[in-house]
Structures are given as structure tokens and as C-alpha cells.
Length: 158
Image 1 (cartoon, helix red, strand yellow):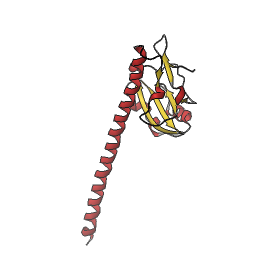
Image 2: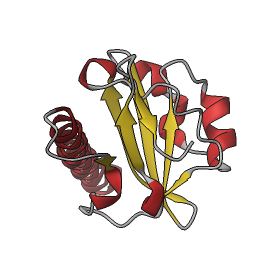
Image 3: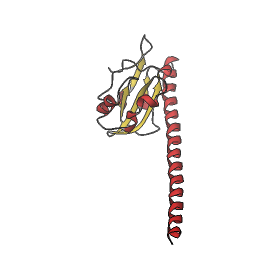
Image 4: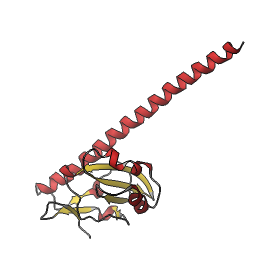
């Protein structure tokens, strides 16, 4: 009698486990693609500026998702500093050093105080130096940058 009850329960748990694994993997792969596209959008802005096609690196035109504020954190920021700057507890920031395999700048896009997207932008693709740890965040309309004589991407309105 017990085995008639236990077998369906075990089968249900196995199926639920497969479903959860598939769901987590799907979400992770989708997030990876989204971040790769965002990194490419930023890089295209940097290349456009370097080739003199544009006068600024204008991140305000990134519109693949809705956002209103950009936070920029250098490669050696701690999770506590990031969370304090954002004003909220944000789980990926706890793993920022582990996730960034190469030295990177962490760009966090928020909408109405909630993180909607983030990307680790490798320093070799462009160094967001002297942006300051944008504790207050940068309004979308002001998310414009230039490259200085030291080859750092700096915020135009600092």
C-alpha cells in the first residue's frame, strides 16, 4: 500500500526537479544573451565615438529595455558599496567579483528604483574611469560620456 503512494510522489518530485533545472537553465541562457547584446550596444557607442562618427558615447539611446537611471561601479567595488549606492539589496552584486572573469566595470540600469538590467563591461573594451562611483546614479538623459586623454570613458556632466 505504501509503495503505491510513494512511487507517484517520487515520480512527481523527479519531474518537478527536471522542470526546475530546465527553467533555471533557460533563464540563465536568456539573461546571458541579453547581457551580450547590451555589452555590444555599449561597445558600438564606444566605437562610434572613437571613429568620430559621434561626438559622445550616448548610453541614453539604449532602448532594448526601459530604464531611467544608470549606476557605474569600478572593478574593485565591494558588494556593500554597490548595495549602498543602489539603496537596495541586490543579489548579483554579492557575486560581482566572481562573475566578472576579467576586470570590468559594472553598469547597472534601474527603473523606478529597481534593477532592470546589468552588465559587466570589460575594461579592455573601454575603461569607465573617473566616472566616480555614481552613488546617486546618472539620469538617462545625462548618460553621455567622452574619452579623455588617458583613454578613460568619463561622464560628460561630472
